[in-house]
Every structure is written in C-alpha cells, then in structure tokens.
Image (cartoon, rainbow, N blue to C red; front, side, top):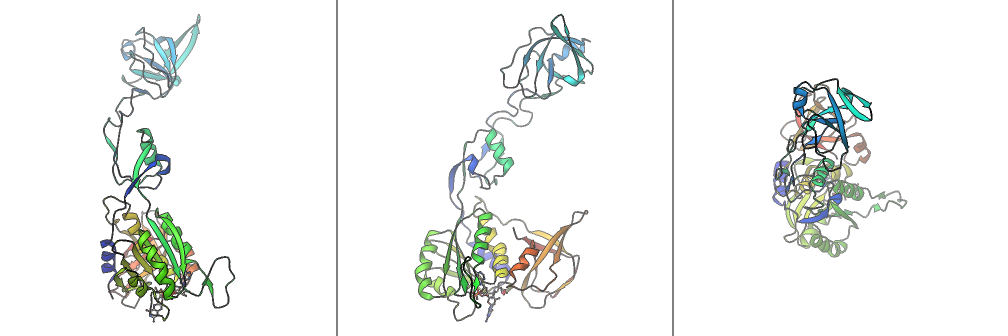
Length: 405
Ligand SMILES: Nc1nc2c(c(=O)[nH]1)N[C@H]1C(S)=C(S)[C@@H](COP(=O)(O)OP(=O)(O)OC[C@H]3O[C@@H](n4cnc5c(N)ncnc54)[C@H](O)[C@@H]3O)O[C@H]1N2
Ligand code: MOO
C-alpha cells in the first residue's frame, strides 16, 4: 500500500495539458487563457477628463485670472474641441478628451457660473493646485503593448472586462476537460425510484458531476451494474472518448468489486490500488495509454467526495493550465485536540471559521466521522490532512487544508 505522498506523485505524473479552442469572449468565464492579451492602445487612450466642470489653460490661472468666459460645451464621446481664446474655457464632462489648448479641469463645485448678457462666465472659487488637475493623462495606467493578461490567466469578471477593453472579441482558451462520471453497484436505484428496503438511491454520480462541472469540466453520466459483462462492454468507449473517467464504488475487496480487473482488461494501466489513508483506502488509479486518466474512487459517499477533492479536482484544474503546477498548499489551525490511531493519513472533515487575527480555524465535526454519512458533508466545508506518522494532534497546530468547493 502506498503513501498519500506517493499517490499524489503518481496522479501528477499523468497530467496532460488539454488543447486550446477559440471562443467568443462572453463565453470564456472560468476558462484558462491560452494566448497573451496586450494593451492595444494606451490606457487611458487620450488625456481623459476626470470631473464635470470646465477645461482651462493653467497659465491663465497662474497669471491670476479667475473669471473665464465659456466658449462651448463638450460631452464625453464628442471629438475634442479646441480652445480658441487662451483666456476662455470649455465646459467639459467626465470621460471627454481634453480639448487642445487646455491642460486643467476645474469641477463645477469649485465654480460660480453666471450668465452676463448671454455670455456664460465661470468664476473660479477654488484654484487647482497644479496644472493637469482632474485630468487622467494618456498612458498613465498602461502603455500600448503592455502585457495585461498572461497565458494561464483564469478568466473572471475583471479579466473579461480587461479583455473587452483591448478588443479581444474572440479568445483562445483551454477546452473543457471531458469527464465521464460512472456510478457502479446493484444496490443503487435512480433518483426518481422508490428503493426497496435493501436498496439506496444513487447520489455519488450527481455529486461528482456537479463537482467536476465546478472545476470547469463537461460531464456525461453513466451507471453500471456489478456485472463483469456490463463493464467489459461499457468501459472501453469511456476510456477512449473522455479525458477523465471518474468512477465510484466497486474497488474494495468484495465479491462484486470487479472494477480493478475490468479496467485493466479494458486496457487501463493500474498506477496504484490502495492508499494509506482514511477515508478512501481502496482508491484505484490508472490511465489508458491513448485515452482517459481513471480515478476509481471508493463508493462510500464521504470517501468519494473527499478523494475527489484531494486528487481529481487538482488534476482537472491543472490540466487546463498551459504550464501546470500544483496549487500551493493551504493551511488552517486545528481548533481542538484530535486523536487518530490508525497509521493512515486521515482526511478529517472540518468547519472553517475565521478570527480577527486573520487565522483560519479548522473545527472537527461533533460526531465521529463515518464514510457512509453523506449528510455530514452538509456540516463541513473542508478537510484537514492529519499525517500518518502521528496519533495525537494538538489544538493550535497548522495542517494542510482542502476545501470542498
Ligand atoms: N474487506 C474489506 N472491505 C472493505 C474495505 C477493505 O479494505 N476491506 N474497505 C472499505 C472501505 S474503506 C470502503 S470506502 C468501501 C469502498 O468500497 P467500494 O469502492 O467497493 O464501494 P462499494 O462497496 O460499491 O460501496 C460502498 C458503499 O457506498 C455506497 N455507494 C456506492 N456507490 C454509491 C452511489 N453512487 N451513490 C450512493 N452510495 C453509493 C454503497 O451502497 C455502499 O454502501 O469498502 C469497504 N469495504
Ligand atoms: O474510504 Mo472507506 O471510507 O475509509 O469507508
């Protein structure tokens, strides 16, 4: 049986970068950028007026002038006017291009405007401290050609806005991982069926599908009964057509746990079976040489869920990155003492809280952890990893943290 560290290493060894595709920008939320996006012009692209008011030449103010006849009005979006008389001003609005001949903007709040014989005149009440006041200078933020979004950027709302502003109507992004989600087991009935007393409804499939979709995957769902013939026919197309196959159940030592053998007969190479961990000791992992990477997760729902987040989710996220590397480990502080005797790495479900000193606290759930207790997942938002080489864990110690989201 291998350690969690060795299992992690083997999972990473199968990482492959998925190919790019081109999408309209509006469809790129959550995707990973595969081309760099540069500033197509200076930002701001022109000397941009930052306040509603008047534009003047600062020289006139410096010479003591306080009253400015208003020549014309320029709104945002209008081509810039030119100040004809250097002792006059142009009424100007936020977002407009600064008129040639002016260099400073005085906001309405700092002016008194009067109509004297139909000539509007602005009297300056508060003199701006320097030339250039209330003007957002061309290229003050970014220069044309600056790299704004490097390859590997995950496209969130801010990234979409920056891509829009540089005119990237189409973007090259990693295509979604194609994931087959397979539940196995004769005791499982569909959600809309009434189970007999010895049956239960399928829940792992939907759980894994939802989790994989949150990691950016496109999913298809399957259910196979515990029947070697069903597996012999059903598995090869999945191994051939998908990037990843996520299975649950059928991997421990039971008489109907056919999966490890069936996967190998279907051409998948086993990289490990059984990890020194709880939950999830019977975890089977492998890959098809020309096809899918296979995570055959133990069927107990808590085990399935935690092992997905410990091994499969990082793989799915990294495979969308052009230069993948494992995400840095997050840590939380254990909030209460905890004892775990078996010499297995323990994934301990916790509720996270945050204190004003900036610490993240990991609170073990009140009840003893049980891999079949699906509802316990409703009370946890993460798990911490207790190393296999110790039994006692003291409140206050920092432990690796894995979020269940
Ligand atoms: N002799 C041994 N028996 C078991 C071992 C062991 O080491 N030696 N390991 C135990 C551990 S740990 C786990 S976890 C389970 C995992 O077994 P399988 O992966 O073969 O899973 P199943 O037996 O098929 O199912 C386990 C449990 O989970 C329920 N299940 C399965 N699939 C679903 C689903 N899609 N939705 C909801 N619930 C599901 C299933 O009904 C079982 O109750 O093995 C132990 N045994
Ligand atoms: O993965 Mo098993 O849960 O340790 O029940």
